[in-house]
Length: 273
Image 1: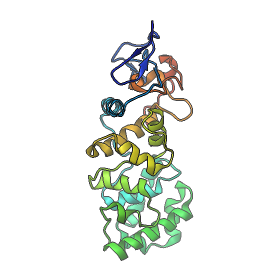
Image 2: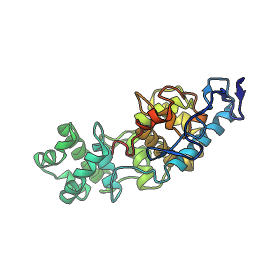
Image 3: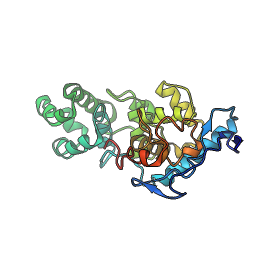
């Protein structure tokens, strides 16, 4: 069968699909409905790119209807702190120390006055405990001194806080304040490039390039969709292509195993949490 070009502008091969039928499930994740469509790089119009990107996001939204931040929190201060602590560790470990941490230091004023050794003992299981303790002490002090003990709801204010970059700021804005933001972590950046949405590697450039493809109101959920998919299916070293629900629209299809049974074994029912 000859090659076909769909309305998305992505060429599709005629390879036959021998896996589960449309709507089937593999390892708890809905099987790739069109894994027979193996995209190949072609010239894609801007309109085609936008449509394809939004289609991928819609399907990922159907795949992960419960997608949200996997860090536990009760208020903006807690989310800010646990996001800072999540660097170089898992969400599960951060969630495990959260109750003890905030029972001792429920607000910025209390944490700013914390005994360093005691605070180090609480965050110790997370690794890099000295650096993280220093960040929490400085961060809390800045909130007390510059913001009256409240977490600011503006990106420009958040990124001025010690230990807070754009990624952390956007997590807080999107999930604590409902202000749309794109969270470019390693998963988001990797998938944005695999999907052909951008070739940028700098997180800020990725944020702007991808943000231009979507309505602003969709940015926060878009971030969750890509992060969840990256943690569960589209892995860095061996993506589970044969179990991917967006295979039809992915120009990187085939980087990982396409056989559905092989791919199913790679799927994680949970992410790094």
